[in-house]
Image (cartoon, rainbow, N blue to C red):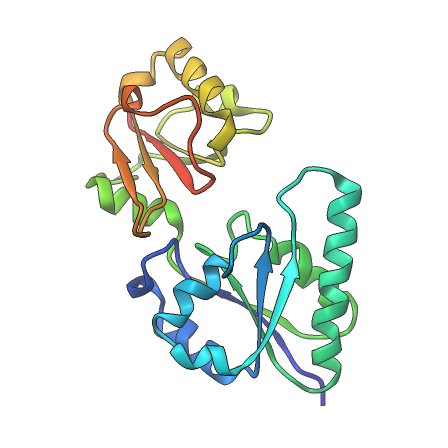
Length: 230
């Protein structure tokens, strides 16, 4: 009997935002897969989960090198290697929990991997969690959408930002990071600069909340997002 793959959302950073369902799947899966994208000693998703499920460290840990790059060839190699490693355990009948920050359905590497795993003949499911922008909105005390007000989720460092910013409603700008300077300029150009707030490392010990972009430098950390309220 083959094992199943589960994409388990661990939330944006605060371990108290792990769902009961996420905890259950972490506990029941014998193999824990975590993306390893840098030189940090412990992957962030694992660090969050172990604060609630300390016995996670007793499980089989599968660290998957998944670089943060837009090089399609490098990504293809990394995704293939990750799927091969996951399928090794699935063929042995072992369930695998792939930990992902925020919610598994939003800009998650799991989206690339689960389709490949399914193509190999295995089951792959998603365990939803708290999205980073919902947690950030709560931290700054803002309602993202109400009544008929639309909500735009925009990858700020990708093409199409201006088009999204021109639409009505609240805008959430994710993946700002190294593009913050250009994002600031575009917000000024469109008259939205004064309506923007930034949350960096939401729910983590080094969380910072900026109620004005004047308080932020030309770059922000990878785990930063901007909320623009009209």
